[in-house]
Length: 294
Image (cartoon, rainbow, N blue to C red):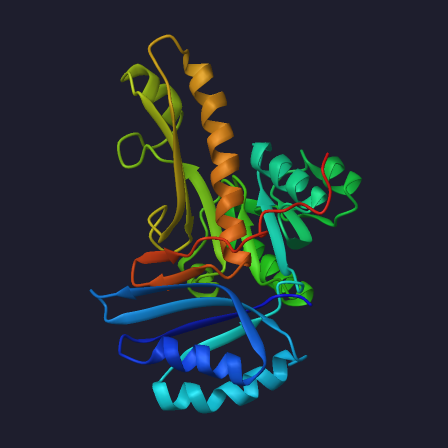
């Protein structure tokens, strides 16, 4: 039997955990992992529960039966089957390290997503994508007409049923309209030097200032450039002995790891937007296991 997932968001108040546990028990479900968080600043409660339907309860049956609990306690909720992988579009420009990393993790089953398309404004990685038996779409920005390019992208989102867009070093700024339309469904990755080192060659700028920590940030995309709610971050320590080129190489490794962790958290339904913050619950046991190694 596959584990199923229930996520809940509501006003912070007594009795929610008991109501959810009681409902699942009554439906013949055994809770195997659960996490919760009270955002006291916003008076919001979040909960993610992984459970096994031991008596064969189906998703539709659970959704329908849970409506009474939701109405009584004022809950926003969703049920998920992790076996249904999230349909994902990957977007890339000319830096391919994150794309290569995602494709490898996807290929061995370590990143449980369904890649429905790879989009680029260049053709550098067309062969790589095609060699992985994935559809490649070249959407160029002609004469600076970003609106037309974004129109093509949205058509692709609609035709593929994509639920998530990952900017794997896609070096174009998305419009406010697109960010709002896809709110909570676009993840971006960038270095963590902002706001200190903006513009071109941030790693070179960091090297010239003797920075000792290199980092990366993955976040949901909003109309505020590179200022969306943060999902995942990490750092790597450097010293005076490294060159500017070393900074770039080390930074790329961190970017790959941070982006993959952010994608994993999103598709495992472990992320909850709370104002400008993202609540990220820990992974359930076995969530990182690969289908095959190598």
